[in-house]
Image (cartoon, rainbow, N blue to C red):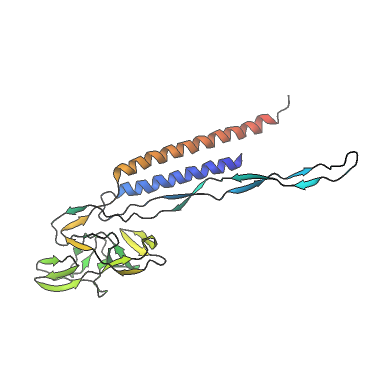
Length: 265
């Protein structure tokens, strides 16, 4: 009976994780360059059930010890558990802004701007850049955008800024730097760190990105799907309710067993 309670509780916890994941995607539906996260669920380890018993002695009329046996009954599932929350790196739609420092990456979902953060080098698809008082090109969170030389990009106070499709930045017709665009051999090892930045974990295999086109005056919108997220939210709610009812039913049955089964008349 208690096993059933734990099984139902595990299902309810997974449903709650699904709600949290969908809520995060919906909250970032208007966040530039945001990539929605998915939810992967797996069965919890199952238990192998055996019936432990002692068969009586086989000789009639004589006292003989029984024979201990343990016939196999079958496998017992113990519920579900969260396996992973991978990121969907599919490209979002491009939105024209006309701002010369707004940049988007098109043609390759496995391409990222390279930025310097207090925690080290990180990667982002959010190209809503600004120029600080010293002329350094930065993200909205103040992280410096890096060039192919691995250095922050510094612009002059005045002058027209143009960015070519290969990421080459020019000001007043003079080449300033080229954006460092990075791709990865294994996107599963690229993990979100918050503020639209991704960190390398494991063997991600960073390398120079190819096939990506930098679009000046555009921003990449979030790839979160509002309709799909709402459907997933309803599914998670029903999933949670079903497990909650299962917990209540088993709890009532346990209460009845405690209060009634052993009762004497």
